[in-house]
Amino acid sequence: MKSVVMMGVAGCGKSSAGQALARTLGLPLIEGDEFHPASNLDKMREGLALTDADRADWLSTLGLTLAQQEHGAVLTCSALKRAYRDRLRAQVPGLHFVFLDIDPHTAHQRVTARAGAHLFPASLVDSQFATLESPVGEAGVLRVDATQALSSMTETVARWLSDESNKDMT
Image (cartoon, rainbow, N blue to C red):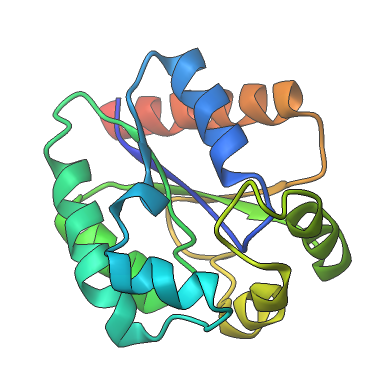
């Protein structure tokens, strides 16, 4: 089994979908937010968007952590720009991405609803959409509707990963 990144803007459900997929596949879950340095966490709590420089070491750490999972893992990571995804791909050849696609209004609602329980403020959702470079069309990417039922999403992703693994064996 190869590794997969659950990606998208804040509020798309990366953590929930990642947990469900990891449980279904019997793989470890790597929660990307847990690897942010304190300086990044402070910026986000203050409502400041992270820069490419802020994300550089974080992405390197995530790629290294993922590469160390010889049997695969599920990583939750926004991976908003193609350069970020390519950086992870360079460290983990054959890496797959699941793009949890969501509209801005729904993302705002979800992030607002979890205020106080999550470090990411709703004020930064617009910056996430401004930064997002859609991965649709990139190799090894599946786009899913982030508003569908978690069980349906998990089933779709697990089936896609199985099909992708079978392709790699032929």
